[in-house]
Length: 377
Image 1: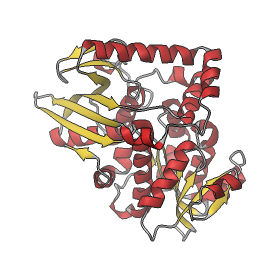
Image 2: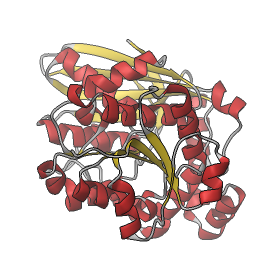
Image 3: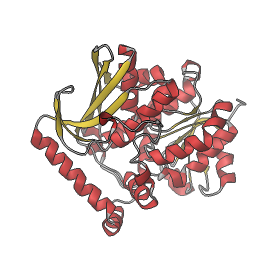
Image 4: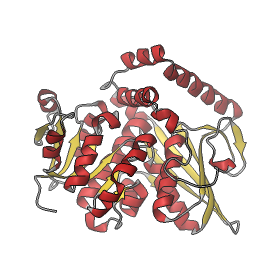
């Protein structure tokens, strides 16, 4: 790659998640890293007082996006809904030779990125790495560790325990767009990112009910993150020639805890499914809106991943991170992904295309997360 002005550009820097990413880079980016912020509104970018160069971009004009991408080695995008505001960036990165990462877990959009860009990204030795938020970096990396531990996984399950956690306006906008555009209906295909000629097995079908899981030894409810995480793990399997079954749940100590969570999610889904209430929710929590610093500092998330081999050997891996999962943990994951792409290039796996965190970043990202306080056991 020829010399470029920047190592990383944070694109969409004035949104809620973008502002948190800028603050993360101010605190944790190496002193010799050349980074910049980019977006549509120069005044709002300047108001961030990031102390780094500003690049003004018109997100609906490909030439403007191309000019940005030519100047950087890596783009970190927080500009969602990603199909609307970041797909032109992916297109430019693939053509112009820059790596890319984002927090998108929108699997219909990622399916289209694979079909449109994977082959050319491989040819151009470009890494396109979605799934780098809480959906689905922790699960994808945990299953990488579990498979390495056992060697020949045939079945695996994950269970999340979450303390605190809130949605920001950008996340609500992305979910709403997926529903109104029809993407959400496509995302019900459990093999969307890991095609098979066979029908899904019982464990691979998205769970609908609460139940007590004997392998995980907890009461479980369907996991909203599972709709992204299971597809991300299956994409990793396709890329690495594996084929173990994976399912994911929310974990609770009691039947009533699982029941209460499942009922809450059903109410939220009903609100989002009905256009008038969906519009009300978007007005109440617009893009740029999010929880306070105190709220974001207060949560935590733990994933227990269990697996079994054909011979019956079993093992577990646990991943624990402090902070609001959808905000603090998400920002940490995507920022460390971008820093890995920019600063640890020679140590990364020799993999290119439209990838997952484990395939693109592997042990490098694990070590980075551990250095930031993520506990892995």
